[in-house]
Amino acid sequence: MRNRSRWTDGVDDVVQDALLTVHRVRHTYEPGRPVKPWLAAIATRRSIDAMRRRGRIGAQEVHNDAAYETFADPQANKEEAGDPARALAQMTSGLSPGQKEAVELVKLQEMSLVEASAVSGQSVASLKVNIHRAIKKMRLIRSKAPRE
Image: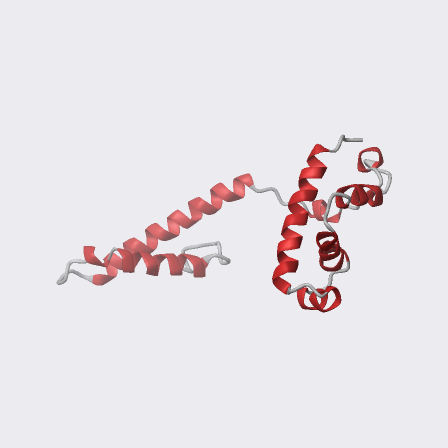
């Protein structure tokens, strides 16, 4: 298979696919007939299918090295962004003290659940519940807030 294909990157995938196909259709082999032509037909078809698949994917993909080299302009979308501190204060204003503490320790200060549990006195399970409920409530508050 390797000598038939100019595409050397995916040869291992084609071989694996051919082996899986042989396993899946082994019941079609007739004992007494030569094995090589049966295996060659399966391998050839799997190789052709892989090349067609690669051609379809390659025709739709666009590779642009410059796309990964973008840098945001600090002034871009400044009007839409608003003040992040004010937005955070607005979203956390409706949270209970336990939820606010859990979000602050785990999400903002990036503590582990065990560390946050030791600091706050809440169990790991209650921290998880408080974070889940807080995020749900903050999403609701954010969706209802007027856009600036």
